[in-house]
Image (cartoon, rainbow, N blue to C red; front, side):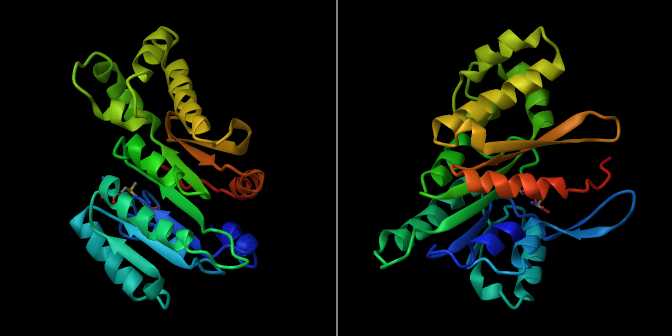
Length: 254
Ligand SMILES: C[S@@+](CC[C@H](N)C(=O)[O-])C[C@H]1O[C@@H](n2cnc3c(N)ncnc32)[C@H](O)[C@@H]1O
């Protein structure tokens, strides 16, 4: 986030926007160390060069209350808009707000440059929400891809007649045949295949393959629980991402 705002602050973007689809309470306590670290919305609020607008969504009542109080004590609180609702609903209003700003002609100014963070616990973020974000002209995405959420649900969902959360996550039922083909290869092949399927869907929306990167995180039993995906339509975004992930020090996960 810091690299993003630092590098882009003097360019001709009319606004630098941050969108957090699942912001959480703003701080997290890690186990077993007990260390408290800033969550994504507060990290975004405390970059050296600030975002112009921050759109922070959190559905949980308690988490939202904590987030609101924490954001409220920031000098930059007027730049933040908070939404206590399902991100799959709130995204429509946020994209409309940004589109309206982008729709006005401003001499010498480019449209807004947007960075969205998608940090679900499982499969809550529907594909139509990703599509909605991607409809904005410049939208970089950091996606916490919940591999455990997928692998926990895929077996049952693949044979369910009605639409499932996995269908809504991928925005299609085509993943089902891809999954069936990969199944005999074991869990690593299934995981890899479904991530690639998702990346292919991003690619089809203009997030070209050479311009996205993944970072894998594992728990203490060395089981992969999520993969971080960065997707940009622009080479420069990937350059920043590559630099940023090199600095990542993973906190211990249970
Ligand atoms: C993994 S946490 C987010 C952590 C946060 N990004 C951070 O860095 O600290 C996911 C959050 O999403 C919220 N949530 C779950 N489903 C949601 C939905 N459909 N829309 C918005 N928020 C949701 C949960 O209450 C939870 O606080």
